[in-house]
Length: 66
Image 1 (spheres, rainbow, N blue to C red):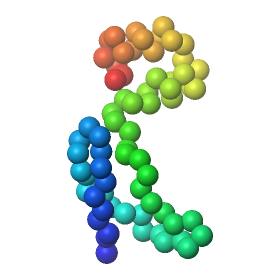
Image 2 (image 1 turned 120 degrees about the horizontal axis):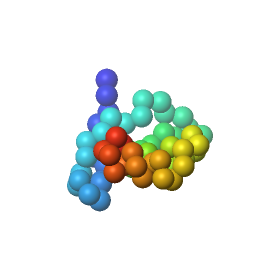
Image 3 (image 1 turned 180 degrees about the horizontal axis):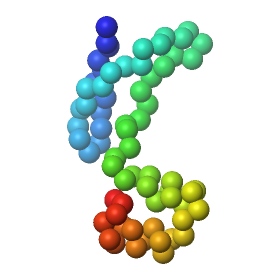
Image 4 (image 1 turned 180 degrees about the vertical axis):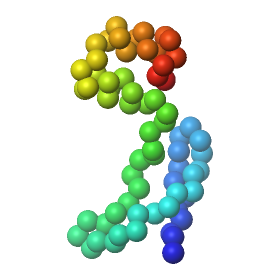
């Protein structure tokens, strides 16, 4: 059994999502933000992995990453 909730997205409008399954009285599960867009955190993740800014920019320019 799934519980479907409507979640407002500023870019896409209302989205229907599956609600978290677990329900805890001390810390109830909830949806509090949208899922990341394709490539939204790519630069941040690659920087944390040790890649330099010029390498990341070249990969973006060459359409290897978004």
